[in-house]
Image (spheres, rainbow, N blue to C red):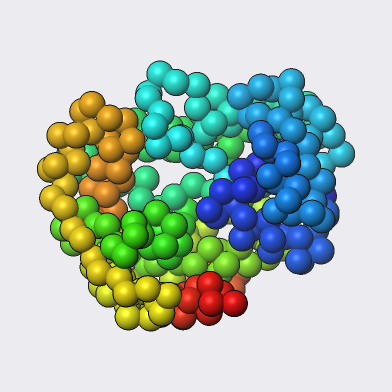
Length: 293
């Protein structure tokens, strides 16, 4: 299996996965709403303009492909009734994949979505993610599904605002932070191993930290700037979130990440797809070195 269509390849996690697949020798085609941006990022990939919410635009991209890697999520500003990439988009992907003879679907989900229903917590975004998993599993197409813990990239790409690492609420449940590069290598190996078909893989790093613990390690090793944490009460975001969807998204995901009782469950993933190598301190060191070049 060499021809892979990547959907969502220009996002925070999509980019490392796409680079890893290209470097491993796969022939990559990218579906992109902004084809110019995608082609600049990945000059060695074939880029086809399209949108998962437009099924007709998917036909050309799917033509001749053997597998589809899917990295989608509801936009942070989305409302429940909107047409969503991870809901209607997934349905369109499956329908076109069935018509065009796709042999494999690989889906990026999340581990924390399992918090839905715990401690009275319920969020429609997690409903969407859980439904996407079930649609892929029931599609009749061989699948591989990944459930990552929190990505280290959140520190610099989502939480860093100026010289602050912004935290919300009290982080009580440690998370097994994973680097996107390590996850990307596991994705590569899943395409190389027939045994990964119809498998679901938790994706976790070797050591678990709370947000505060992880942020302290990141700050201590990030040489580009002198950083500090700034923590705001979660209740403030919840009140603001009743009016602003973007803030509501941040409040909900923060509550889930702060409280989800994550247990280590990636032994089989490591055995089959490789053990993660990047620690938070190494990630921050490497990021600092990259930015100094």
